[in-house]
Image (cartoon, rainbow, N blue to C red):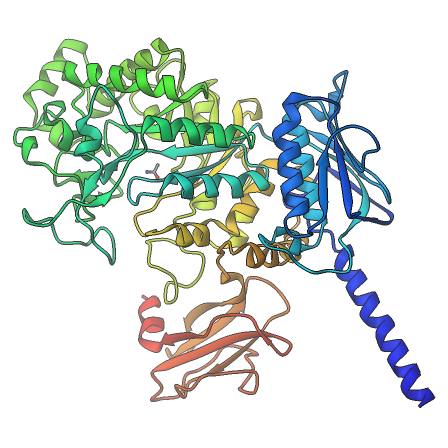
Length: 632
Ligand code: ACM
């Protein structure tokens, strides 16, 4: 009996130690500048008082904190002065180290203090504080726990870059105002401060422009199709145009305010002169091409041959640079856009503009003669310079994709570098502001795992590659690099759950690249944090991609010319179990230890990963024909 009691006592201690240990795990994303662990824990009392020193500017942040600390815990959180549990303090005099968005957070056993120069810093301090509490704090309903503790720490933190963005394409698939707000809410928790809203494209115009009503009565609607976007059949006359939607100006104002409350600026993008089929379908007179009055908003059918040496459009999806109506149109659009979005920049697109219809146009030929333009790149550059004048006349600065460099950059334009890093390097060399969003590291529409299991897109970007994103490219003057962002194009993203899946965890990686000091980034420290945040997302019901748990397949030929398959994992600590016999492997199957030579008549390799006894990856069925195909 004594033995049993002793056993029970020691096992209870070890359970307590284990849970204590679980609570001490500090997993802050993005990694702060400096963090010192102090002895002990802050234990959230039943009645919490948040003191905000009467600052109106901190009201929203205090309300946010109140929600976050009360919903899951059931504790009472009051905002006011007096004997405070948590103090939110705006510095009377500027603390130089913190800059405009930094904060100092001290978690002591009885009180918590967040200090900052500006309300944004207080908001970020709150985000860090919430991440110090157990993941269940993210629950939308009451969770019963014996205590809610945060480890005592002293943190000093501020961002490396002022521009920390995510882009969402709402044209290829429409996302409701509420979905957009949920996306913004999520990004703000990871200290992103810029939401780039890709509002117009070939497959839908999404912002109400009151002086141009057809843009949303016609340009926002197309035929509903499901499958592999970009391969659909052309819309038929009798198919209803019911797929799509748009944001009223009231909706836009609401989203802008929602974002502002979370210290997120909203950058609107109107993508011209290419990617403008929805605008042309609404106002065909903006085209140089006869027959544009028959054009329709794209429904996901092929309309362009994308080639490395240029894009060949099958229908002319461009605004005509030789047509004064294009500039009058943009003047109206940017007047209203400038009135809706307080952010100082307007994104004017400029990417992937097909020039093959311009080459056949008499109007373009006449423009070239009149303006002394030597080639189609200079025609686009002429267009961009006129667009810049319009944007500036509305009191805004212009930013565009790196194609706006071609043929001569408009004098005050900022450049968003996406086709690798060269555009950013070149724009910085010309003393222009740059935002880095290279496909190689930040394209969130790319697949995160093996194409055999992912929704198919033409390229892959795994988390480890995204984590290696360095916003200042080699050879660029860092003074011109404003920051970086991830871009989520949504051709293959049909709903918000999939948008979340594509965004996370890669946006964690981008958050660390744009916020944390370069020397603080560490892949091996990052992954346990990612897993901790997966737990948070599970509790919050936010979707994420679990691809880090799946194997990477590398087919090769051996010296006899036979297919062999090597497998590895992006993260350590996983075992891969496999079979060629078409059944479902588990941890009692063969464990992978080195390249596999498939048995002579086998047709598939099935694999799954485990951590100890716990299945981690998804069951993947890999046809050997697929592996053979990848050898080519
Ligand atoms: C882009 O990805 N076309 C900017």
